[in-house]
Image (cartoon, rainbow, N blue to C red):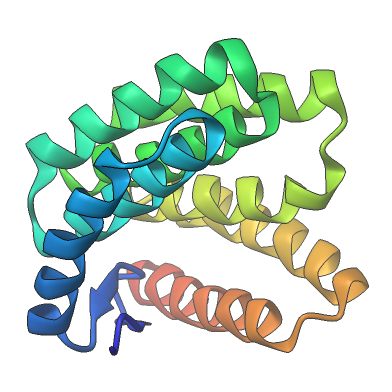
Length: 177
């Protein structure tokens, strides 16, 4: 089943196969009902991402909210990850203030609990928020921080994603001048 995404010049992710994703969502909703605890809410948070990608934003927000309520009490690291994912839903709706609030919460967890292995994801998401707000200078700064962290990780796919974001951001920034 193809659940892969790709990025366009707007730095938004798009589904390669929306039909396969719809089918996956339908099955996953039923599977999640059989689960409990962290596993249920981890999968619910992941499913919310697919709902966002499919344009089912109200369902995505409800799933992120449910997952967040569980993780707030039980799993700080997953709460931070859920926040990063949820911020994208707000960003896609151009609800920038809400996206910023959610990312600030993620940053507080990141700093307070020292989840440094997620710092690159935080900067990447923050950079995309600035990008969508046409603040290309701030976006570029965030992407450059993410790139340095990703180079240290050595993850080629993440490095390529950030390099793409930097290239597009520079192009947009230079076209404004």
